[in-house]
Amino acid sequence: KKNLLIIQSTSIAFTCISFLFLNAYTGFALNIVCLLRNIVFYFENEKSKFHIPTVIVLISLMIGLGVLSWQDYKSLIPMIALTANTVFMSLGKPQILRKSVLATSSMMIIYNILVFSIGGIANEGVSIVSSIIGIIRFYKGKEK
Image (cartoon, rainbow, N blue to C red):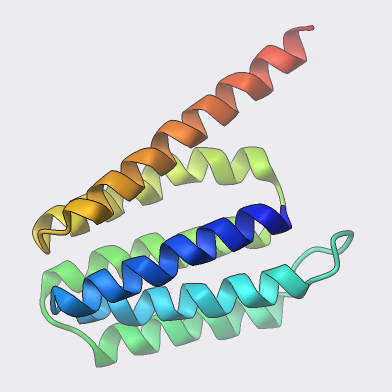
């Protein structure tokens, strides 16, 4: 779990830089919060679920920064997708997270198309394929 958060955080850092250069300020701002979220998740106790107040603070930051960086209707897409992703990550249930990534990454692909982020499209595509593989492996493992 922790190695995955490190890899994901590296990807998010590059995504932030990409969005900044593309003047996609909402995507940039919300991904900064995602980096913060990953740092908090990295240091959380493996056996405990994420605390609701922390999730509320992270979601509030996302909504607040989304409003402050508002550009147009496009800004709603990462606000909804990344807020939902944070909620699903906080549940601590990998299979639920994998299924949710199918929706949230699809939304982020739309955002990436709208802001012309080719790297972002590829990144979210990899996330979707990875989630599909994880879902299939989970169900194949249950059949044995």
